[in-house]
Image 1 (cartoon, rainbow, N blue to C red):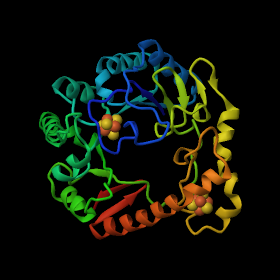
Image 2: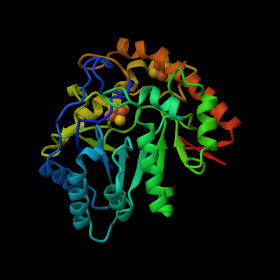
Image 3: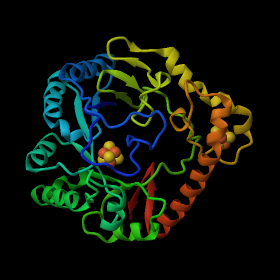
Length: 323
Ligand code: SF4
Ligand code: SF4
């Protein structure tokens, strides 16, 4: 699935945001860079032309806050629809939910978008981190927008998914209580974390499941990697995928193969290059420095899995549904 970074700007300033200044060394920060219509159309062509065998095309829109570029998204949908004769096409939108007005709601429903909105729990939990630049919490606006959408289009509700970031200071049982009792969320799939899966859970195949297209047309394996590092840039929409760069990303598993063989966290380990801190390309030492954090994440995943199960949630892939 190609995911288009339509803008690097956002109308919120969440405390844990990967793009907040000072949060992550050398990472990009919020900026006014936006994707041009030419780049967006070229990215859509790139994906459709290189995957003629697909019977279904999925295109995602991402930011910053993607709805700051609502006009561009509308044009992309129109363009993509004109390019996929005989195929099914679906669209995803990742948004903070603050800009879903009536016009946006009509458009999302009309084009059958899967909508992914970030809500971190009750008003108090959510507003702790997810704030406007002036420090005001965003909860009331988002809930009001979602309620308007639900009231206008009750059947659309099943297309809305919620992403939740658990604040380290949050009371997990209160967060779960809120989601399981609030009318809006009762039947929803809530994405908490990548949870324990049956098989080895290592780095994904760069560019295969997803392909992140930066505002300028540079290609990255996903939206989570540091876009300022050349190591992660696996190509451009003009020149295509650079296989050597992809191999470089895949081979990070080998850096610590001896240590991994005897590590208890191997089956849950999701330590991809995007989670390792390094300057140019990751070394064995860089990777080993990230292992303790990865292991403690595995422990907290197992803890969350137990608590979620206690509350009647059923695991399905990386998300949880209330049974
Ligand atoms: S809504 Fe997303 S991009 Fe915007 S500040 Fe919050 S975490 Fe960052
Ligand atoms: S935590 Fe480190 S040693 Fe353990 S499996 Fe993951 S990368 Fe290997």
